[in-house]
Structures are given as structure tokens and as C-alpha cells.
Image (cartoon, rainbow, N blue to C red):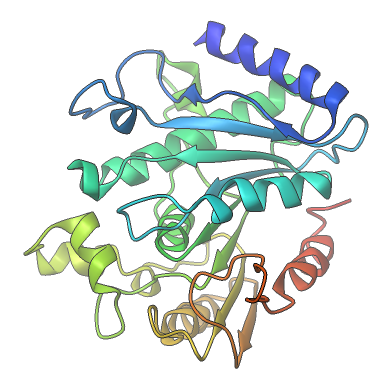
Length: 290
């Protein structure tokens, strides 16, 4: 693990000289990931750094979880977000987490996300970033994974031999873009199948329906969705926001009328709602961007 961390220190220095840029994929674990089914790239969860330009880092970090229904990882919701937020001074890391299409089921995906968050907190302490300003952003199924991390975190294992495992896995805030939240009435069938299999235990379905798992300790959230979304119903965002409201967790909810599922930051011919600028406003409100 020391070898991996030293490599990231070099990457951060190099990226700061060249401007916002990405580094190579770095494995989350020095050896095989817990529960790995093999040694192929699909079995090795990794982080890729996107560093702000030299002198532009503001101390905040963001873990980026691409969507893709737990079947694939959408690059525009991974590197696309990371490049944009890095341009705002946020040090970003895109997580390649394990997928249902490669034979993985819960808790592999959550284990990957939690380990990644712990690594970011450890690296922040080492690299002069703020360990209390580490967020997560996820879209669609990546939004489900982000909401799961925001509700199913832990404080770390104080006596763990692996120093990374002593770190908290709680994100300081979460940005949820047209997220899959529920696996009940408004659930996305494909995400549920890839995460939990064909006939999951009803108790597990409820355990991973994030609107049922909110507590006062859940991370503050920025949530956006569109009414026009035909893939993941807008009720997912509304249910989660309602649960946050009951638990008195700070949140900002943005519902737009128009826009298909999977817009991200927008593409030619498919503009996105102005969520990104409104998210920056919220991040400043929360003192995440200083």
C-alpha cells in the first residue's frame, strides 16, 4: 500500500504541472480485492486521479461513481464529471467498481466504494487536502451506490492492521444525479437484478432501498432529476428527499421538467438542465468550496 500511495503523490505533482489531467488506474487493494472472482481487469477495482491545474486545488476531494445499471460504467458520468469538477479546483478520483455483469453482487460494490472513500481520506491527510471535505457524486446506478455509501457507512476499525481501514467511509456530502434510490414500487429493474440477482431476499431489497435507510447521520445531499426520465422514475429522487426531510438532513432537491435519463453534463443536441452551476452554488453554501 505504501507503494500505491507514493505513486499517487507523484501523480498529483505531475498533474499539477500539466494542468487538470488524469493518471493511471491504481488498485484499491495492494493484493486481490476481497471476494474477487479472478484476476482480470473486471475483478480489480481501481481509482483514477483527475487533478486540478497547478495552484488551483481548493482542498476538496470528490469520489466519482459512474452509472450504467451495475452492468457497465458510463464514461461521461465518470471522467466527464471528474474533468469538470477538477476545473473548479476539486481533486477528483473516478472509481472503477465491480459489476453485476461480471458476476458480482452486493456487497462487492459497496465494499469498493467504502474502500475508495477511506483511501481518499487517508490521501487527503497525507497530501495537504482537507479530510473533512470529501464528497461523492453518482449518476443513475452510480447514484444508488452513492446513496448507499451515504446511508451505510462506518467510522472505520480503530484496531485494523491496515491503516486505510481505520478511516471513516462516510462521505461529507453526496451529489445524486437522476439516482436509482428504491428497489420497491419505483425501482429500476435492471439495476436491482445486477446488484442483487434474480430473486433477492425481500429484507435485502429493503436494506438497499436508500429511502428506507436515512438517519440523522446520513450525508447532506444535492439531488437532481427530470420528470421526463423514462428509465428511472423521478419518484426516486422525491422519496429520498422526503426521507432526508424527516431525518432533518440538509439537502437541495432540483426537479426539472425536461430531459432524458443519463444526460450528465449534457452532450451536443442533448443539453442538460443547469444543475452543475446550481450544485456549485450549494457546495459553496456548505463551505465545501472555499
